Image (cartoon, rainbow, N blue to C red):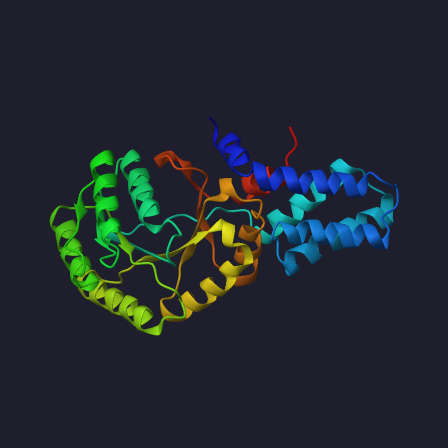
Length: 303
């Protein structure tokens, strides 16, 4: 399956609802009425495109209609072009430094941090790199077992300890091991925590301080993992996490199970945090790099 086909398939729920609704609105009349504009806004907002992006798309569509009229297909093209403009042309890459690159995965419970850590390590290994995983979610016993199972499945080393161990200590040991074995990447799976729980956020700060003492500049990436089904509620998550541990990017998971795929556009545009990867399924290869042009095309593409 090609990359665009995989993205299109993963965004099918969002695309089907969004493009069908836009076609219904704009094919009723050669002119765009005030009611049509409101419905177009509603369709875009329902996909969690966000107010700022929605206004840009609607303004562009209105301008085209007023100047020359438009057809449904061209409206979808206008929307696609505006989304690309909001996202930017160039995909954001995973940081890479000489020696060991440390990547910390953070987020709330259930966002998919553990599987994301494993899938990122799988990508590095597939590209010829030497990844290592650190099971620093020591509050959820199943998380340690889950990451170790991923490690066995993908043949990637995992550093872990017992349930209830100090996460910062596990991170320190993992960094020592990764340095000793000449690993390229260390992916740290941290415990899920609500951004409103200040004691847990302080603990995350401690883990990052400890790892920076072991590896200069670490973590070199702090990626917030967000479940796409929460839609625009993810905006608050991103803002609050960014205050405590400065984020370098986002990973949006479970996009194949929601019709709110527009939230990716809203978050990157409004917060200025690059989306680096998107999750489109459960298999190791279903975590894909975020390519803005392909994503915008998949949102409005029609077979």
